[in-house]
Every structure is written in structure tokens, then in C-alpha cells.
Image 1: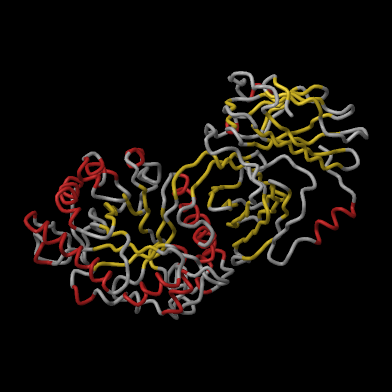
Image 2 (image 1 turned 135 degrees about the horizontal axis):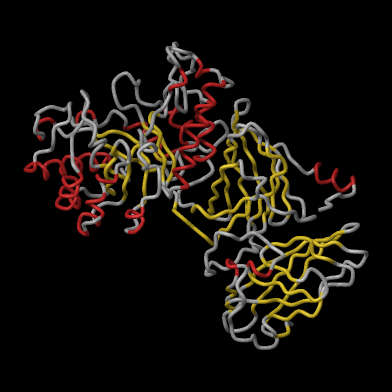
Length: 581
């Protein structure tokens, strides 16, 4: 396809890119998309991305105010965490240790939630009368343990910190020589069934097993009373991928329980006492961050999970440095791994929904997830290949008012990059070995299909009428539709955005729009509809995701065409056989 344009026009477009990587030029031409986002097909709601406060001795003092602000803030050089995980000590006199950090996270961050996890019950509640080496909770202490958890929640509430989510147990399947407690799936079910309702003002999470082992949560999900007493299911990633558990959880989805990944920790790249972590350009540290950590965040999102919570937020291998001289980090300073994680945490916010997308062969090296929030769409892109993917065109159903593009790679840390905006499309170049985020700010003049349309996972445009079902609806009354054209033309080509409005009183459920192109025009590509033939009297047929147009509703379609001099808009519009006004 010939997309050459006058050099003066290209120069004007280039001049509109700001230092922040934002372009708000008017639509000039449309291109065949490499990534097509379908906001009508939705998956999980995102609860957030986070990390843990210090838990054990040796992991340092509580986060300082400045460190907490760096971790949860949304400003320049901040990482945007929206979940903070902390521990519930079996000794109530230790509950205040992380209080100031949690207060700061709640007050400074945006919508930050607190997850509190117990490693063990008090020793006297357990069969081994010890905090360590596992040991089970005595059945006659189930009520005491519920009271213990509730007391922690109420203590924090009294200090002004809401504990949004409370875990019943950290790693019930791991019984080391430090704080730990053993449970089976049946025991967890019995506890939450009989005592879950007694832990007030919080939502319970089960079961934080090492491998996200579903045998620890299935029994609770299969019991109506127990199931109704929990808010979430969660697990850890240690060996979860090898165990086949970094995957969708159909039973949890069946009962509407969001899934949280609540702990993982990997720093194999450091070798023996290496100080690589303080070097932002270190290849070994970056490769582990991209190929292991960020890849599992991506897979967690693709698996339908709603939260991803890393281990310590402040550690030499984590998000901000701990100042340990052996590992070369500066205490409190953001690390490369933190910037990489912020490509999710800072931009994909609680309440956003993951949505469907399709990719062209050009975009096949890219691992992409897309999300819709309030008046915005975000895409997080991993390019783990050694080649850049230049001029990647992203199309969304809405009109885009502005866009931002940030990149983290071995040589860049959340750096703004150029992005061009053209109607419902943006174009970026994705660097090799990078993670990046595109934020598209959508306008009120939306061309998005109605939310009531049928979901589709293949919204790519096509010139073949076989790609879309034939309309099945009663004929539209004459004059019950309106079509407007917006033509942008250049020397031998043009684009046309057509808005179809249902001005009648009945819902259109499947449609075929007929129109006559001006002499000499030939459609070369299109979007949001299939077109046949490519010239003369053309029929544009809905694709699956925009088949429904409610009374008063509208949908926008479009095409690119060549011309021999006549750039007039089409004429003679009919919708399902009825003339449009």
C-alpha cells in the first residue's frame, strides 16, 4: 500500500510531538493496525500491583515516609504501587511496627489497599506449641484464631488504617524453621466456614500456597457457606509455572472470586555477593527482570488474575534499594526492576478491566495486554526479542484525544517516547528488549461500539464479507438512520470515517450499510466493518463486536481508498434496505 505523503505534511506532524511524547494532531490518514483493541470484550477487573513491607529480621527497618511515597506515589520517579502487603505478628505488641508506613501508603497513594498475612498463630494455639516448623491450629482454637485476626484488623482500624484484605495463612504447605503453620485444604474450608464471618471489616483471602496449589482453595470454593465468607483466592509463584498453576482458575471464576498472586522473589542473577543491582545498565539484572519477573506479570494478567504482589518493596533486588554495600544499591532509590514493574503498577490502576486484542504478524514478537479505565485505554507491551518493532500501529474503538508512551529497557528507566495520534489510532516504535506502556486518553466523541454488543476476539478489519455474519433483523423503517462522512484526502488517496446513527425506536441487531462510492475510488483497507466489493456500490457489513446499535446509539466505521481525482463522500446510503436521512 502506498502511504507516501507530501514532505511538508510529514514535517508538520513531526513538529507536534512534545517532550512528553504526546501528539494531538487532527486525523490525517489511517493505517492497517498491528494491534487492534476490542474494549467490548472484557476479562478480569484489576485490583492492583504491589509489594511487601519488611517482614523478618534482617530485612531492615520499616519503610521511611520518603520510601513509602516513592513506592506508592504517581509522580515523576515514583512507582505507583496500589497494594501493600504486611504481616500479622502472633504477638500483638509488634502490630504497631509497620503502622506509620501503612498510614503513609493510605494517605499518599491513590486507592492503595493493604493485605495483611499471618505466618503463624500464637504458639499456644498450635499442636506443636511453637511458632516455627509448621504445626497445625488446634480445632478448639479456631475461634481464638479468628478473634486474633479480628483484633489485628480492629487495632489497625482504630489507628486509622483499614486492612482491606486479610489472609488466613501464608504458605500453609511450607513448614520451615521460622514462623509457619500447616493446614490442609479441608481444614482451611472448615475454619472459614465456621469462623470467617467473625473477622470483621475486611475481606478474607485464601490460601497463599507456595505453588498457587488449587487443592488448598478448591474445598472452600466448593462449599457455599465457606465460599461466601471469603473475598479472594491467592497463591504464590514459587514453582507455580512448572506445576501448571500459572494459569486460569475456572472454579474461582465460576464463583466470582478474583485471584491474587501475593508473593514471588527471584534474584538468581546476582551470583555470589555481586553488586550488579546498583548498576541500572547491568545486562544480567535487566535480563532477569524482563524475561522472568515481567514475563510472569504478563502471564498472570493473561491468566485472568487481578493482582500481582512482589516480595519486598525495598531490597537490593527489588523496587527500591536497601543500601546494602555488598549489592551496590542506594537506600530508597528506585531500581531498574522497580521502573519495569511501574509500567504496570503506575498506569494500570485498580478498577481497570483487561480487554481483548488481536495482533498482526508484524506484532507477533510482542507480548501485549490491554486495559480500559475511565476515559482511557492502556497497553503494556513486552518486547523480549532482540529487534525493535518500528511504527507499530494500535487501533482502539474510541477516538483518541492524546497519548503517552513510556519505555523501560536496559538503557532507559520509565522514559517518555514519541507517539503519534490519528483518530482512533496511535503509532509507536517498540524498542528491543523492553517493557513499555501506551496510555490513550479517549475523548467524549467516542466511536466505540455500544457496550451491549456481542463479544468478539477477532475484530480485525477485512475486505471479505465472509468474515462477518449476515444481518438478521427486521427492515429498518425509512428515515430511521443517519450517516455522516468525514473524508481526509491527499494526492492519490483518502480515508473516510462513517458514523451510523440509529434514529429509530427499535434496536438494530446486525446491519448492512450500502453506499455508492464516487467514480475512480477503490477501497484498499477498512476497519470496524467488512467491505464488498471494493468500488462502485459497496456494502459495509458489521463485524461481531458492533452488530448492535440501540435507539439513539451510533457506531463508527471507516476505510482507506485510492482515487483518481474525485474525493467526494459516498452517496445513496441504505441501512438494511431502508434509506438513511
